[in-house]
Length: 75
Image (cartoon, rainbow, N blue to C red):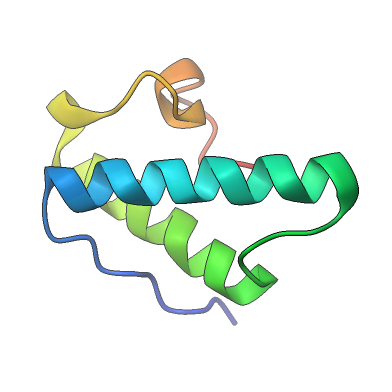
């Protein structure tokens, strides 16, 4: 069962969410630590994806979605 998504209200919150996800992923892959547990990370990424689906003109170039439109996940 998928965890619910994190609701992202606006472009500013989206930008912050993307940075949080990028930072958490970098920490996880660098040394195994992360500021987010797996469920929180998954909810955040689903929230980012939902926001990007609703606002394709605001997709940041730093997201994997913008780099790989066919890839629905970040990891």
